[in-house]
Image 1: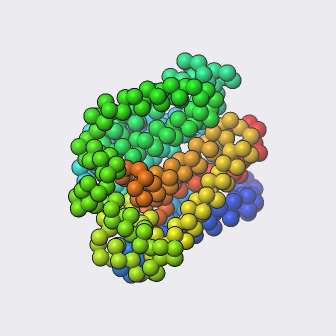
Image 2: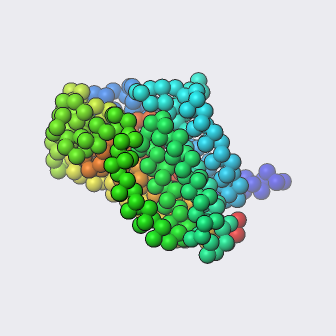
Image 3: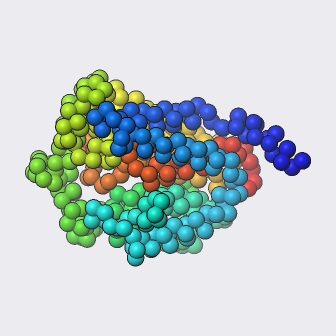
Length: 371
């Protein structure tokens, strides 16, 4: 009888999902397959087919996560944070090294990047912290030091990998929740001023390749065939696309192998060369619609935990888009942040789709007043 009752509720639960946003996300995933197909010179291998399979599986996971009760997210917030923090420590001790960085745990079936999942875990854990923090305590020491410690630990371990881009995203996600949780603006302005004053000292702590990235960001033409090659070719690809692009399968920068990492970090440049400004604006508009939905959801949700979680997850996805597009256009240093759902790779896609599934879960339960 209980199984019959649950089965009867499934159609209603499915109808409660934000289907327009699901179709929007599916359209982004389908467009990514087209871009990766072209990047490989008109072949489904080695990127497009794997991307399509991963996206389909990840979308199924997101749909499953949409059915999880809010109280479950609240209950696993701290254990999930602790488990992923432990995975970061394990990565430092046992992780696989690739490209000079130690960021992955080789699990046999999949190479997992725990730092990607920490982008969600930090938002989840801090949303729980502020959910139970008494009103008026967010500006006190009791309301400041625990979140700062929770942010500092993963940021520190990710910097050791080294992965400056991901550590900045974890920091940005954590600080976003602290601000939305009620921390006064002055607590951000004072440390921000101190941070600006300490930039010369912080610069000396960077790895040599990171210093080169900063130097190239300031003057890409200083070494156009060396450290500045990536960003120079990316800007050429984007600029040569013009308004409407060169056309499908007509991108010379990517097809002639001038554009490095054309399927991962610089996939936006690959797309912009063939689809032009129209394609780039259209893709960014899709994410603008998604962000608008996520922020509106945070205002509609009745619980503190749900509001903070919805806003934090939405902003995390926004940070992916913002940093990657600024990076490929030369407006920010190259920090290795992929373009969500379009760049080839499993860990970032898994992170974004888990966040999407959690947002749909919040959407279904946005009218709950108590968890």
